[in-house]
Length: 144
Image 1 (tube, rainbow, N blue to C red):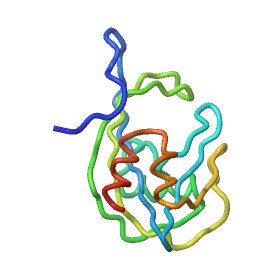
Image 2: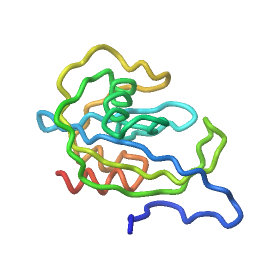
Image 3: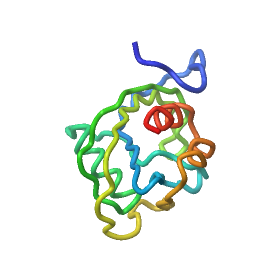
Image 4: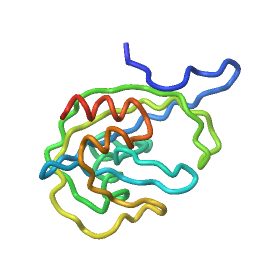
């Protein structure tokens, strides 16, 4: 059974399953997160949806690069959780199945290419308080 975080599904809503891959990226006593502007305005673990025909590791590398500008190495899966949410950018209710990986940020190639994203290095204690969803925070706490 996959642990659920966040809101209970709303009766009568159709939820689209959205698998995704997300990274915990520690280095030098800090953790690399992404700040996503409108419509979310929140701190998140870098990552996102796994596209059709794409594997989770491939998606993880692509999403982290898009959202932080960093290449990563040695991803290792630490767990999975799910949450039910509304995704305004897609206008859908989604059951997000979030595969969480621990990886090393190794090479910044430039700023994030994903519009509205900003790569931010935070102290892990600050990151725990700032992450927008409890699943991200719980897995980060488990690593630190």
